[in-house]
Length: 197
Image 1 (cartoon, rainbow, N blue to C red):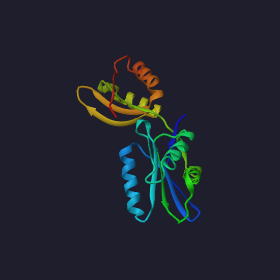
Image 2: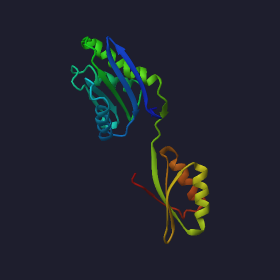
Image 3: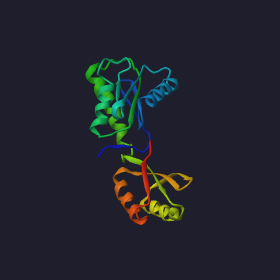
Image 4: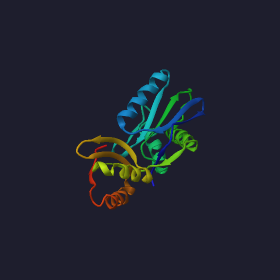
């Protein structure tokens, strides 16, 4: 089962006088990752490189940022893949210490920096959720609200018109059971639609 991170985790390695400052953090997409990398450059203007890897569905990336091709971003991405993570950004800020590490040394350094950081990171199961809208007659609003609360669904919005319409969110694998339960409670008078998230 894919996992993501509950929060950012940090670590630091010193290898032959080079300083590697690593961070792994939850990240939804490439645009957010690029914003984070730009912020790191502002925080570390004297750094030699800010290498990064993003595993976020079809928006994955591996950036060497001036290190020899394939020695930083790709190894970092492989660590994320090996850990079965999704929606995670790994960054490593490198301050060059004057001693060249060679291609093999760089691969090890970037791999170790990310792997060590992940040891201290709290992983959480990635649960796909779905947003639904359910409309019922006014007399059934209380019944619907209790059923949603018992199911652990998150109530997003309530609209009062000709009917009461509630937007909700819950884990996708629980959607069918909840709909069947509410259909039975309302004797088929609930009207369902899927919301765009």
